[in-house]
Image 1 (cartoon, helix red, strand yellow):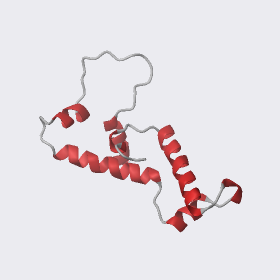
Image 2 (tube, helix red, strand yellow):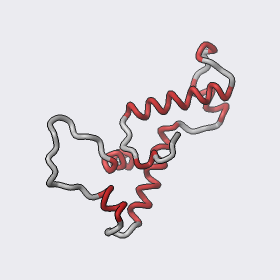
Image 3 (tube, one colour):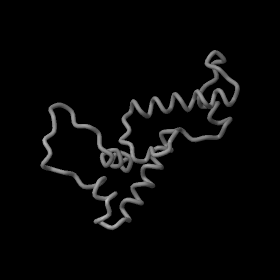
Image 4 (cartoon, helix red, strand yellow):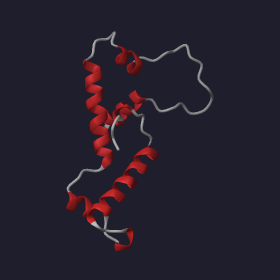
Length: 108
């Protein structure tokens, strides 16, 4: 479920969808349904897993460390950390980029 997630620019909607899918799997793993009215924290403690949001942040920051250690002329570094300024963007809110999500993770 998280393979390649360190390269996503994850929005809150994506994180919420992953959290819901994860809780469905954990409930199924424990043999509980939503009708049993067992809290998410109880199921997490029973299984012993961290929330998916923390894992996403951990993977993203680990990948950021790999990218930072690469040489400046490496293709992965050029594609991720450098911005092209001469491209005309459309109106409205700008799309969330990977480096902005990493900055948010570092701030947290």
